[in-house]
Image (tube, one colour):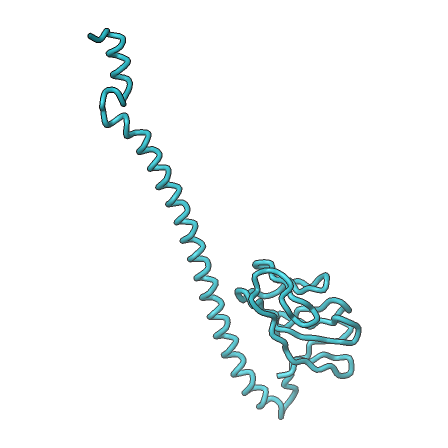
Length: 182
């Protein structure tokens, strides 16, 4: 025989009563938490995927635009070479510090002077995701998007996620003036 206090105690204990509802509540909460954690993880992954897709799409669009500019630029430079200078003037050599460089945003080029009197030029478009490099310091060309770093001497990758070096650009130095060759 069971006393009244024991019966009350058993009715409060979900395991001893065999009641399914109270016994599944803690499990349901754990499962719900797992689902929420999983959903948050999936949302984060989805967000990253969408951001990556948007950046890739923008990179393709910029690349297509550059290709279009490059093809029209070569035809216009051949037609403008008879009437004027087809090579953009990047400025005076004195504008490029020794051990540093200068970014020419309009021409999408970086000009560096690793040692006195030696000038190098590279594309200013990061090889990781197509961002434009924005700073030159400590012998490195820096990309602000994901931290890629390139050498001012040869454009090689010195840090970050960039998969390959900055492509070289052709420049000419005459009478202390730097021009971008077409």
